[in-house]
Length: 118
Length: 113
Image (tube, rainbow over all chains, first blue to last red; front, side, top):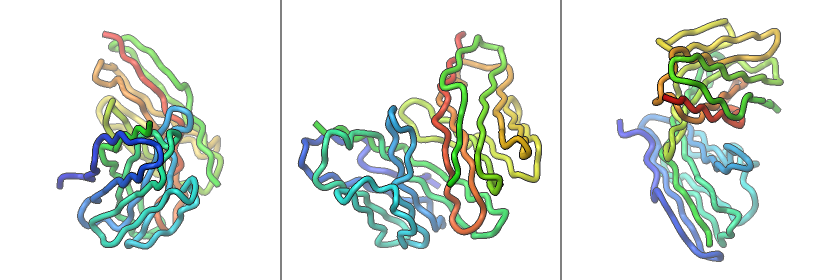
């Protein structure tokens, strides 16, 4: 398997522009997670999906952020309008969640998208 | 919710020395504790994990120990090599439903040749 695929790897944009990050999870995985990583705040969970349904979006910083998962093999994270404070590395991760008590549900991370908002 | 503290934030060792990274967690219901290694420009990758019904687990030069009573777990790397230099994250998760780990802030390990 190719692992989790993210695009683009790098994105530089100007404040106010719309940014769309893309993720293709590992085939067969049923849970997908979006994280943001910064030096100040570390690794933050933004939102996660289970079977394409958003389960918890409490980590989404504000209404400028939105995420979709139209099918099991694709998800997007959109920022509109973007601001300089959104500059960070955004990771997508996927896992297979069996829901069983002893399930480990190991997360596999993509390479990340480094976003710079000028 | 769960809170994970990780120490130290930076660890510098000489090649061949051992390195130990420690984490504590707050929720006694947590039962799964993975460790991730993040190399520069890459996403975190799982290197070892442990469940709450096991006290220690080894995989070649790395080992993880768990003390449920004290609610802390540690990563041990022996005979460190320059390629072990990376940021290491611990995490803890509570069973039931989707697996949502709480991550520590990370430890930057530097192995000097």
